[in-house]
Image 1 (cartoon, helix red, strand yellow):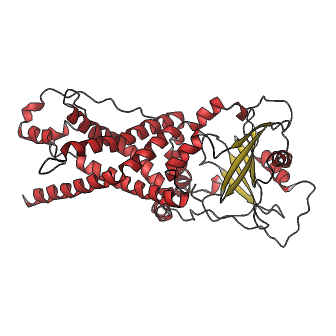
Image 2 (tube, one colour):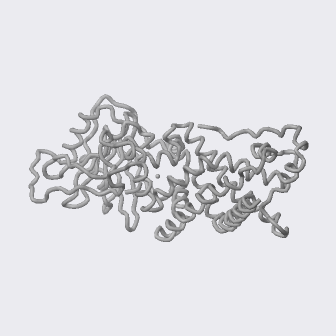
Image 3 (cartoon, helix red, strand yellow):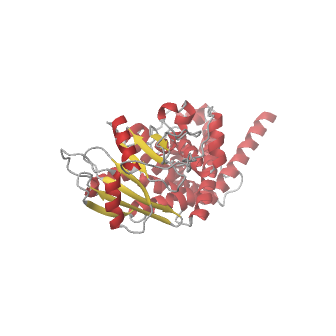
Length: 411
């Protein structure tokens, strides 16, 4: 008897926390989920609607990065050069200009064979940048929005765990009602089932969303998760330093020299990105990716800008072959978060799961609204109580719920 009372008290406390934390964070969780849902297929949509991202394949070599850089800088004077990116044959080259504070992000799309400028794009403008800004910062200044989103994600993680605890049936009779929606019931009961049944099914994917989101939200969380999975490097990005006592003496620009070396080493790369040194002591950073749909297999290589000697790093963002299992898991964080790690089926799964996550604050609010004048335990499921008393009431099987379709940089 004492154990049963303790269990009931525990569920009441969890229920109260679930209720009030849900009411406090619901609108933020709704925005994060909806924007995540809208952003799910941004790459596919942009490829379909932005013709400047593609060129006709020609039987001639690409122009070197220094040439593309000069053409783009003449078209966008005063911008801060970040990198020159080459894609698969048929893809436009990109000269990327980026400055973090204040944020200034432009991309010049060029024909890599001729140097023709196809598009000068402000990457901070348009629909998808607007959606991403809402997902990360709630359209607030970054220093304000980021901690709010991170904190709401942490609350959402607790909501998912507490929701599973509250969902857990008290007896076999109640269990038979936990996996399906009673469509013949009144609207309040259907709303309750939508919240609890769909919430249970999506919670396992939503927990992955929350954990991968928290990796970006809190440094302590990223470090802790990495340590728990056996990681022994640093999850914080840091550039190795070039030897400024050396004097460069090359017969061509260093970006071109490194680019030629990397194209020879990686002839089948889907993406090859050469970064311009930011300072006199910065390295020349190169990113080489065998798959242009994900990021986790990227080879990140660093060269001394004066000697072209490869520089080692002690963090997880180095060559892929040097990554341990824990390193690969952390590098995979973005691709897991958006579902890209499973390809298109994973993105479809992420889209459907985000949509269901967005529904939870709405259905949860209506549960509270419908019970706000009731006395006693607001979160007790009255029908489960009746079923526990009258097990014969469940002889007719409930309709089976149709399951959802099954299939982020911390520097």
